[in-house]
Amino acid sequence: MQGDSSVNEFLTQGPIIRLAITTCFFGLLWLSTVILVNRRSAERKRRQREGLPPLPNVFVQLTNIARHISQNPARPLEAETANGWTKPSNVPLPNLNMLTSDLPEPDFDNFVTQVEQIQKTPPVAPPPSSFATPDTHEGEFEEIKMTNQSSGEEFIGKDPRRSTSTIYVSGSGEIPADAVEVMRVWRDVSDGSLIIQMNGKVFQTVGEMQDRGLAKRFITLVRDMAQLAKVGAQAVGLPIPNFDSSSAVVSEQGAWAAPKAQAKLPVPATPRINQDYGNLEPPLIVTGLEQAPPANNTIAGQIEELLQYRLMQNPMFQHRSIHVRANTDNTIRIEADGHTYLHVDEVVDVDVREFIQSVIREWEARQ
Image (cartoon, rainbow, N blue to C red; front, side):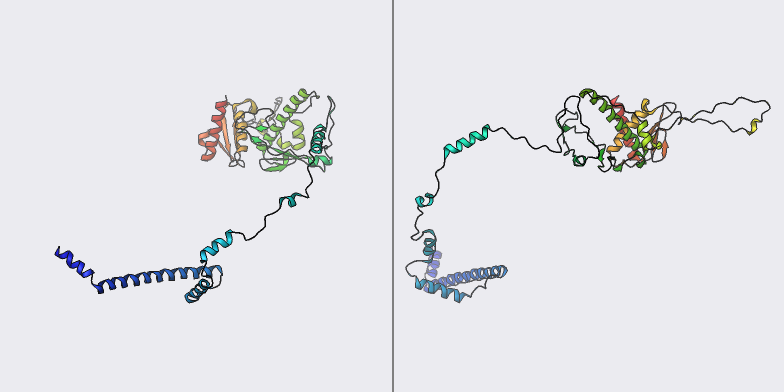
């Protein structure tokens, strides 16, 4: 108890109280000064950054505040700012009668009559377009000249949408998800000739391809379209077109695109008496490559067709020469970039070997 009384006596002394009050006062003053200096520094930097006039000094600001308070002692600054913008002073309200006096009265009867006339009027047929197909009766089809100027305006339309299914549905306007574009065809309106693009090559004749595998795929596509045209002609009642399966195409496009002719065996000559057989030339030996059976009737031919189809879909191998050939003993051999292999596992290029193996597995799955 004696210690508490001594502390109370110490704090109740006059000099101690004045010292504490003075310390608190100057501490608050110092803190306010620091805050004011920091705020003015930030404001000065903001004005300099935004290109505003420089901030006046403290004395000018205090003088302006004192002058403003002395001129308006009755109304505080905040009240004037709040009331001056929220209360309009003697602004007259608009007269609605004056605003709507010049507007005409709506004629609802005339409006209803016009709507009924529009509903009774038959729709006007659109003008004929060059894209529209001319109306034809049964058995009457008008041929369009290849050199007609309208043929240059023909357009097949936008690319069709892809369906989620892998089966084509007639009339859906969609193509299967796994469908690929194999050929594009243009018509030159100047002379009516066709311009074809396949595998990144543009040509008018098969001779321009300089690629036997590509020429074979093209002739196969033309043969498929010819078969489609024959079936379609029967369905619509047109005379069946007479297409030559391959001779017409080969004769116009170059003899190199034709399949290799079978080598003719030499006719044995009649033996003669007293003839010196030592000077005779040896007989022509026909190799197994020339006696190979037709490609379409062999396993190798079926794999070759599937292989060329997959090559056309894969950009990595489109420009590679990869083939599957048949031997006379019904075995197959692999030709890859000029090298011949008796078995798929012997192919040196790993990518080519795996690609051929995947094609063979796909062919086996289809059997």
